[in-house]
Image 1 (cartoon, rainbow, N blue to C red):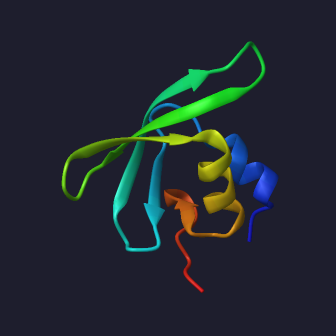
Image 2 (cartoon, rainbow, N blue to C red):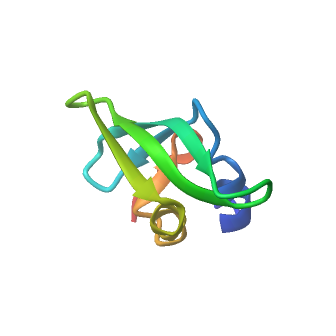
Image 3 (spheres, helix red, strand yellow):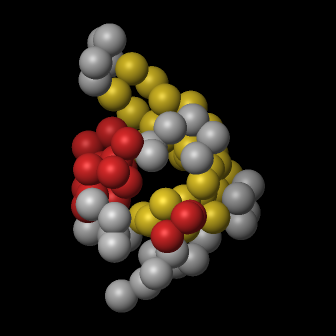
Amino acid sequence: MPEISDELRMLTEGSIWIDDKRRTVLIWRIHWANAENVESFDLLVVDDFTFVNRPAKQIEQYVRDRTMQYCRDCKWK
């Protein structure tokens, strides 16, 4: 299993993720608070083609909790 910090580095525009409901999620756009910190992410939920904006801390917690997994490694608990 990859380290969480490796997965967090994969939170880039265009990366594809799978959430706990097995929906495909595309990181559409990253909104930067400053040169070093992400403020929020625009996500495209492909299954129903909806756009949502979520705070960076929330998305990072989803990755840490394995609620959202990088598509390269979609092994569920």
